[in-house]
Length: 201
Image 1 (tube, rainbow, N blue to C red):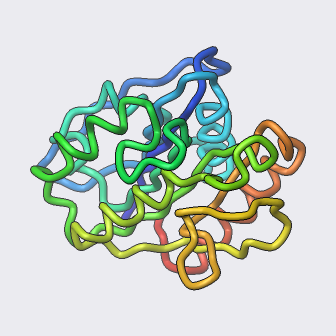
Image 2: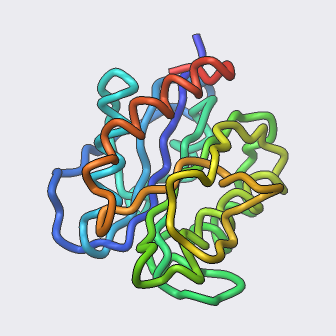
């Protein structure tokens, strides 16, 4: 049975949840995991919402993950906060920036199913809402991954985002600053959408 790995990027520093460490074999596809990196704790919080909605997955900081461990998963859900607004690359300001450009080019992820989620502040940074999620989407798609989980932009109050493709978000966009009361329900609905699209948990 195929499983999903959840990658979560975060612009948060205080941890609401303690990350779990996992170890997987590179020779067999196994398990599901949430990878995240945080500056203030918001991405970690949302990673846990998604992990819980998917049935109780481990969450792990991407900075603590090995390349072989990542190759051991069949499906990946990756999420990004946006700290470097307006940047063309390394937009998250977290461990993801090094991973995307130093590690990912050497990891074989071709054929894996991937879904993206992002963190942003619509009111404070409405011109760059969840830009880093778009960076994740583009780089994993370029590696030959099958991208799932695109969502509607309805219900959001932003003016521009590098995380939009053909009028849709590249995945699930979250705002713990202004719409925190919607986050858990959005996570549950997104997980159900992924299941309907064939993403295995």
